[in-house]
Image 1 (cartoon, rainbow, N blue to C red):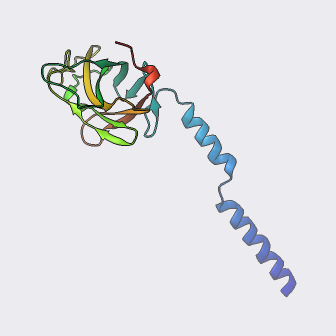
Image 2 (tube, helix red, strand yellow):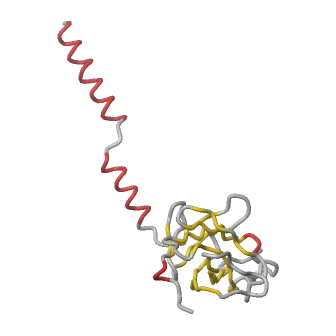
Image 3 (cartoon, rainbow, N blue to C red):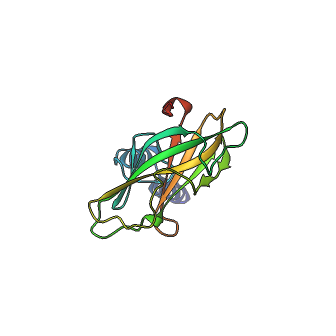
Length: 177
């Protein structure tokens, strides 16, 4: 009788352990499903020049990155250059989008670089709402070292935490002057 009870307990424990575990094939299939979901925005996705990031009813496209010469207002420090990042934001929703809820920040080779807010030709307009079905295009400017290797432009769409995406640019993707 003790032997039968011991075997019964061992088998019961095995079934309990198997039922509570998560097999790697289950988690792999969930990962594959999320990767195949197309342009749905998710934290950690990386985008490139020319690609689009979809955040709910807003689509953000990094059209180009190009060097900018000095302006009357913006003169880069020695060893640095100015880069113009041209974005298009499209409102695919049914209500106006407040473009002040679209921001861009930069990181070059792991170091934060400032978004220059004045003296920019065709600066991104954050003051005029974007009507449903309409787009607006404009520039952000960053001062970066001349010998940079990786430029990450982090964009955020929406209030508060919003939805974020990282556009990663290498020197070969920068338009020539």
